[in-house]
Amino acid sequence: MANAGRPEAWIATAHTVRLLDAAARATSLLAAAGVRAALIKGAALLGDRYGLDERRVADIDVLLLRRDAVRARASLEAAGWRWQRPRAGPSAAFTWPSQTLRDPLGVEIDLHVAVGALPRYRLDVAGVLARAVAHPAAGPDALRACDADLVLLLCLDHGKDDGKRKPRRCEDLVRLCASPEIDWRRLYQRAAATGVATVLWFDLQSLRRARPDLAPILDTAQPLPRPAWWRRQLADGLLDEAADPPKSATARLAFGLLATDSLPRYGAALLLYAGRRALDPLLARLPAGAQPPGS
Image (cartoon, rainbow, N blue to C red; front, side, top):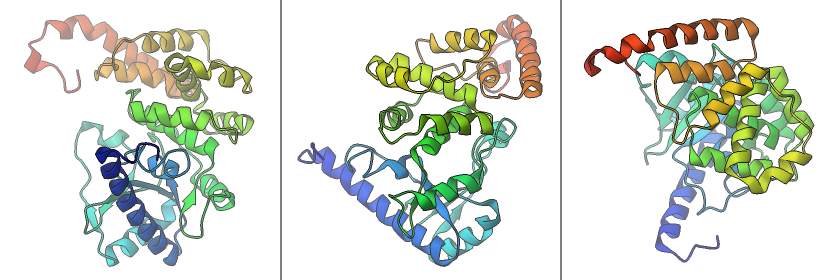
């Protein structure tokens, strides 16, 4: 905590300590109920890849088996956590299937029972938990996924957000990919097995552009097989965007062409994308209030 003397650093540290205390209580409750849950995303990196004042985390994210979801929620509610009604909206079918609960002090925990947009891909939850148990940093109550799986989780998070750029996610990838502990061969095998090799390739290309100083590390890693030429052209177009990709249906479909390694799903997404592009001139003539949501 090199900057802990600054008031804002003290505030960030106090917030992080409060959140980690809630994470410890929650994971202990889950362990007592016989639920195996691994910390993921920001909470998994605190105190290991980040100092307590370096990474602000809004909530606690844990990964658990689907069969344990009901028992996990019941054990937390019995201890005073309260279930939060999920957000409604047209994108609800594509969000992570998770349950959010809040403790009496206002800290939220997201119980993720599957990772990624289900129409596109799914991660082997049981495999992540099995490696978390064997991880040297894992305690008896708070498990932590290995670096390779944390990279995949961040890539899946990217896919879930339809390619939206988030500075914290990019920095998380930087910290993980610069780690000497990361097993690149295992990472590529897991990406291919779970159907997210193209998303991983895209994220590493984006990381190379954002942080040229990481190029030597990425160059010495085991080469990741490149996707087909037409996907590389689409990826280059998305990477060349000066700002965040627009939140339009066309942009979401464009990223969807990168977010699946399944050829049938790719073909379906391509047809939707082509149809949407064909309708763009017509939609552009409509009054602003008449355009479809998300356009």
